[in-house]
Image (tube, rainbow, N blue to C red; front, side):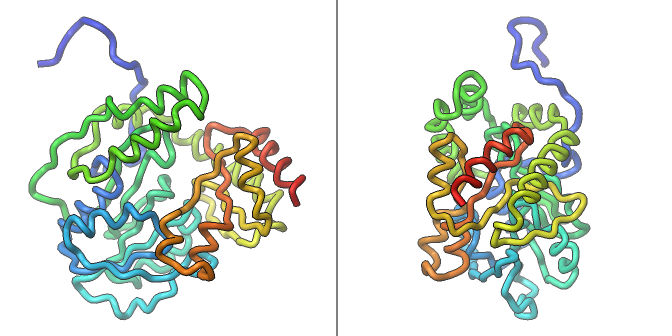
Length: 317
């Protein structure tokens, strides 16, 4: 029975989710676990250049995996003919920049799983397993979406997010640095959890976002950085008209630049520290982790903010 009256809850305008027709789960790694259970794959090929949390479902389900390498365009170096019927190939849509590659190759890759954790706005392709991680793009503490043709017969229990919101609330009320410890604790809290459905709180937040505005701002910021940095960037990009980047990857020989940005309160994530344990220092994957600076372009920022980043970069080159 629905409660009527009493104190107010957090008030959020409700419209419609971007991926309103997909399965809603609690984390991206658990979306992958759900998929692996439903499909019954015996082995999955995964990239060296990925976050180590992707391994969690493989260990939980005792499913074999094998690493493969990527080239400087973030594309697989791999013989797809070796994939068997009971095996799958997991590919990351790196930083929301590989839509064109996926669209050109998905039909020739057996049992493709697309990791769209870094590409929230990329629509799933027909009959292609695809999962998403909203917290990489928005102010939510958890949640995931999954596109798959096969579903488990048993519906998972619901998750609850209210105790994971502290870092979001602190940053809204104070400074970014004040909530960082809580952010790290929240990351730890997401490890080892059972597969659950998305919490009501996370879903309400996902129903309140102006998705068209987010897409426009991210593209504008990315394109402005690329206009000003493409001649200095060791990486090249060819993104489609509908692609929405997560960050701007900038590969530079300036080893001190990331620290200089940090000193100016410009925080650039490292993708991914675990790669340095998996790969030798001379490999491309290690260089993509250590040498590429992943500049923020998200919806919180304007072209003026991008110019602040450019000013720091340009004075160091």
